[in-house]
Length: 179
Length: 414
Image (tube, rainbow over all chains, first blue to last red):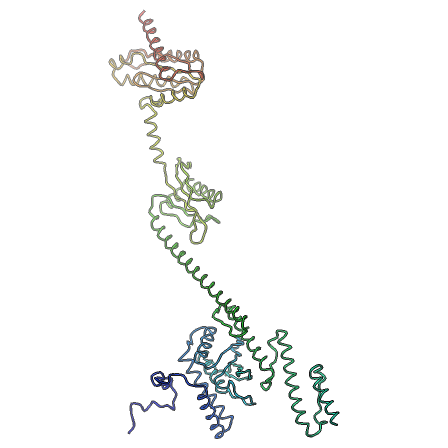
């Protein structure tokens, strides 16, 4: 028999509330967990999706998921009504507090909205062996989602450089997509 | 071949280090088993070339240089430095825009100095903001005070006029002052001219009071004016508070008149005359003192009434006033007068008194009043060498007058 009270509540449809009360749910273990576990899920999922539909498609899904996460993160964690510089400062703090990465702005062009930034000690890829592959598609989507939530504009965010220096650092360039 | 190969590779490595523009390795000329090594060396050479170009540019402070490929792990530390410097540039731009929350987290002592600088800048800004806020509050309080001041002074009896220093613009005029400035006399223009002169003469003086400023405009206005230099809504100004003392001045003149004038004759009073006599004696002046007594006033009063007596007194006062332009005539009371004349010889004084006595005798005393007006007098000359006090001089002169009167009476009886 269908539960009519919760027929619209599905975990396959994302909502911030469905992330649950982690503090309540993990009274003993707490809200933190090792990065290893995060990456275990991320890269096994990438493996399965790539084998099923190819690397390009798998990366597209990762980018789209990252964008959804970025948008929801911005809406629920950040103040979207402040000036750009204040917004960036609060974003830097939030990313550091949640141990997602160390955001460093390199440039912002107020005329066309383009920007260049780096993320150090990135949650997804810091410390990975260097290959020719681009592994930060989720990050690309995440940054796209944040910029969309703040500016209301669609952004194309590309990882333009990625290098190892003890910890891996990724450099991203974002450009406004003019429809 | 191996010697030659070793030389070729050695030469290639040497060129890479010291003449990179000449470094070239033709892989196809290498033995087959060395070609992969050749490819590896060529890749290494490419990485080295990128690194060299990148480090040269960074050394010159050029942060816009193309960055080495992401395969170039040799360049990773420099790329990290490049990213940090670019971020530092961004942070400096943010600081320049007033965002003092920026913190540098690399480069050791530099980071410490930068973070201390931004912290101090923020503290200074906060202090400045606190000062600005304090000033704003003071300004608001002053503005409120000015509103209150205007309300309180609007109906004040004083004339209150606030003039701005640079242009003498009228910043505030209360109702009483408005009425005065609307007068169709010269008072408004003369008063404002006086105020503007005060501003240009001493614009930064402390509170300044001016008493008895006399301005003639139809009548003579006597004004007490207090000047208060102040800042009025951020403008340098002076508030003039004017009190019209004209009525008080007139009242004072009336009081003086009562004290120093004889009401009936309008010559000086006894009080004023005695004061002058004592002053002249004490200040060693050269003058003649005349003690004058009217003859027969009691007879006139008893026979023809007090009005006739008063007429007689007034006529004597009048004729004594014609003694000289600078003679000081005083009525001592009843039928007694005192005349003081500076710097005349005694005989000239006596001669003049004789003339006046003669004129008096010829006066018409009116219908039904058959009597002859006459005076008796004594004259004393007081010199700067005089050592006798005023009361004694007066007594001596009084005796001279009685001698005159007695002699005169005997002559009339004979």
